[in-house]
Image (cartoon, rainbow, N blue to C red; front, side, top):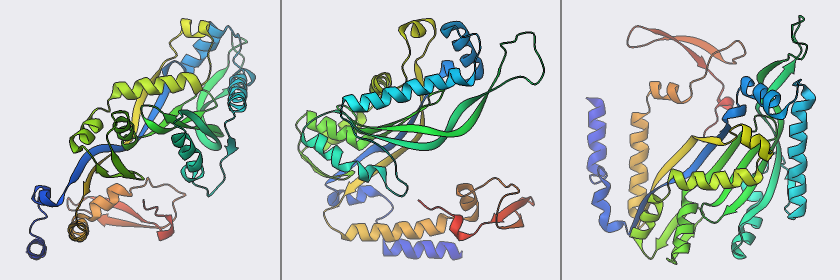
Length: 341
């Protein structure tokens, strides 16, 4: 009963927050679109040790898969990236710790937009962990003297960040691992696609960072957001992957399928409202905070910040009895270890 009284008291202070349709007179612009999109690309033919073994034995014709054979692919790609940056006069630098990459390359991005140019305008090199392979010699002799044990592992090696201004998707980032299996990651923004669509159709708009503040045709804004489809994204990703990704000979592509599959790692959808006055914004913010505190229970906190317990876990381990008489282990971590978005 106590929670009901609190909810009713909040409802009397702000009776119209139950439905956004009540704010139609105060909303000259509203749109729903995807914002941040993270996509991972995988070379399925080289994603497992069996596929790598078949590639080097059958396609390449290498009798022994050694560390030098795998490293040669990495060296060839790294040399190609350096030559590509040098020939096209593209800055290539190591990412410095504590420097936000997007802010660092923003002047180059604005210069590309001002000159109405498309393509790669900056390349970052970064040492990060990623999937790769480890080659070991069997401990005991085998019938095949060329037999090697190939196993997956995660190690720290060079990754390349290509900052691109695409004519369809707008600004985007493509990260390529320089070690087999050459996993790729793509960072897109749905609002950048909308901006390109409105510009192509010569529809006036005003945009601040990632937010549309005004547009001449509201229906065209939502229609542009709805046109972003998987086919459009895949077409552009295939183009940039073929252009900037690791190189394979035509013979190798003819004997084995070296196309990538794409999987969405993260996607964010946002419904944007532009108000005529500041009054509704203040009330909605206060109401959202009240509902958020009321709905944020202990179970939801555990689901958000849940961590697998191990011997290296710092903090105090306690036991908690749930509603179903089940006992759960709860680890109290220091406040410094909690990373809030």
